[in-house]
Length: 279
Image (cartoon, one colour):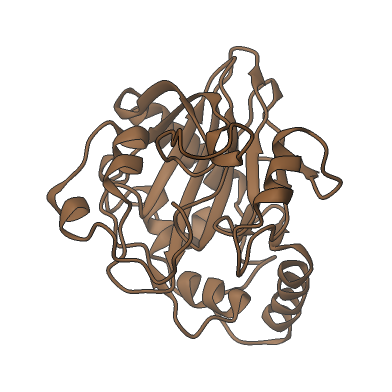
């Protein structure tokens, strides 16, 4: 039976208890998020935690949905009524796999971390959000992104407002995280999105995460991608998702692309968003 104290380096990051160490960590993370919508807590997991999550991901890797297709940054279908150079009409090869949330046992290390004392509260305090809920999608509230040699994830926006990731295992090479911070907040900002897609933007940052690193990222507002991987070792990244509205789930088309299936809840709640941004 796993307990959070075995998985999280709480001696270094006592996020579950009030005090000056937690306050200092909060201040740093908030400053990073305010600057560019991204913050990284290095070595959040213990070595035992990294090993446990790697073992768990290996054990359910056969449940990952592999997909190879072409997609735009919004996961929408092509619209021939738009100009040819519109970013919504720019499609890129996507080859990736997601191990869905219902693959992970409640008492397994991934769920134990997610359900650990103080975890959600810490994330909410970092984001300083009054409206803060776990993503209600039964396929996507906590998942593992699995990528192999040649795989990558092209430029895209997340459907959920905030994404929290744990780097579990890196590929032998490649897999850098690239992002254009807060490129859309109140508007779609199509002109700047187009510059990123063409490789002409000076707003793109590159981040190399190591196993055990915890990342907070405003992925609904920052265009981002994962560079192609090299080598035989898989890349595993756990993804915890949070949103501003209760009961929110993924759009049916996007869910089908990412997980190869939908559930009744995806169709029942289709279109129920707290904003008008394109998914």
